[in-house]
Length: 142
Ligand SMILES: [Ca+2]
Ligand SMILES: [Ca+2]
Image 1 (cartoon, rainbow, N blue to C red):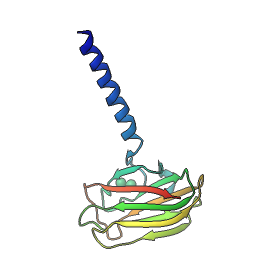
Image 2: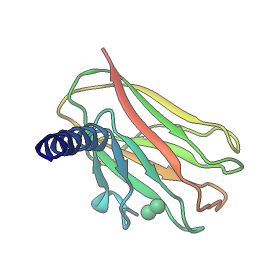
Image 3: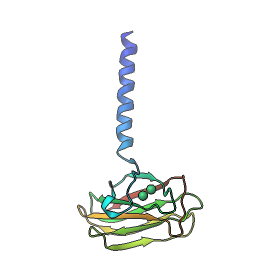
Image 4: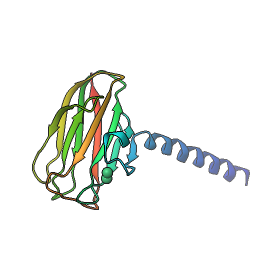
């Protein structure tokens, strides 16, 4: 009886630690994030799952990298969707974009500085939308 209780407690601890580890990397989009003012806060190394859910949906995120170095902002788009990726500085000024064709991933490489804000935008240039999720991963290599 006591032993099974102990094992059960251990099981709970394992689950808890696992959930903590996963949640520090996995993130889900929260609408409304349709402009820079309402950009959703994300973190270096996050794996953010979101959707372009209507033909006028755009998604903005804001990030402060913990490290300076080569920023690598990756977007995996759902099959048969054309979404583009944009990067802006903390004043909202355009830095760069990645505009590959339908179904192709997007990637922006840019030297980022720790502690500065960057905005990331995801837009469908021709009004594509889908219930299927995209995956956004902002990383830094130094
Ligand atoms: Ca969205
Ligand atoms: Ca949105």
